[in-house]
Length: 200
Image (tube, rainbow, N blue to C red):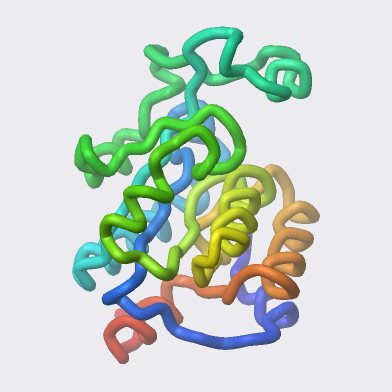
């Protein structure tokens, strides 16, 4: 999706503070490889920018181990789920190479905070702000952003490093995020905000 359109929804502008920010890379897994392909380069750029700025990074991996953890997802998606131990459940290789074992958070629903230790991990690192990237823009990224806001985090939502199920969903999410939950950013703005310089 082109990120230029987000400016029509933008209400507030702010740069993340690298001293109190964490990057959340949501569900960049083989199951979503075709959807993630258009944003893969920007996701990697965002990860590299955050590494350069010494920003903590957490990678979520959506997976199910038994019917006990399906929740409503089993019914909603006719049990077309991501099962732990399968190739589909693993991080996309280009992303996996950039992650460390202690940075991977397993989850089993749309929110990265539900049934995980993510909140505690962020508190331990004194994180006050989160940058949201990954898939899907309109499901796990949006739900995680909303929950982060409710938990008191300042939220930055990537417009060029999140991938949606379709363009209408993408536009709807950006409009919702800008209205009530998050500052919108892209790779260019992130680099300028973190380092005071433009993209090469």
